[in-house]
Image (cartoon, rainbow, N blue to C red; front, side):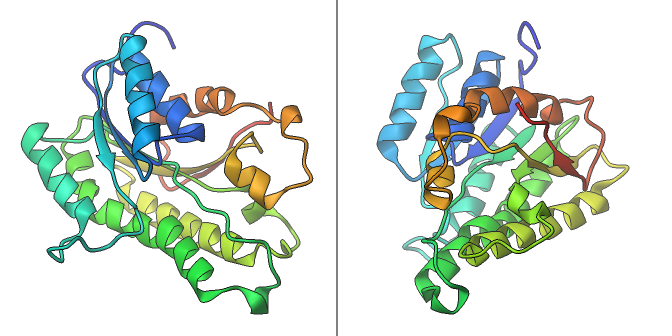
Length: 247
């Protein structure tokens, strides 16, 4: 893609402070998008803000938020409040990218701690439901709303994934949720898909596969390039699980 392919697009990236989310945010902003960036770490968001502005992008809207937090101090869902604020400010949302992820500690399935289980389900699955509930109406107001979530090749394995059952189960649930929603959208102006990237360098990958040599894996920036076409108006699939090629 060349020029400013995302000019006048409003793009929300959930999980933007590092890794694939950071790389996508930078590329979309460089391409002219007005980005709204959600992450738990304020410092990471501020660093990304500086990088976007230094690259000539529009100053992003920073939203420091724990995506597993379902209620704020007033009892409201902070994601719904963000959707209402974006509706007032922009009237629509063109792109929704959800890269946030967590890798619970590797352990035997009967020994999974309840906190780790609930965190994986909350971030990978419940958060997806909350994002769709809040932002689907705004995507419908765009000329070509696009939502992209991310799975893992662990979902495609013919055999099970020992010691990673909480992660695998939550990602499988996310896939079923996104594909079902995307199927409902077929024939509309909105498309929602789940992409399965090749293994790439990330803190999550290192935690789940500690013996792997990360230097042999592609960078988040390289994977982001594979993802950008899936956010374009030319991408007409909806409800698809899209296996991205190896790099």
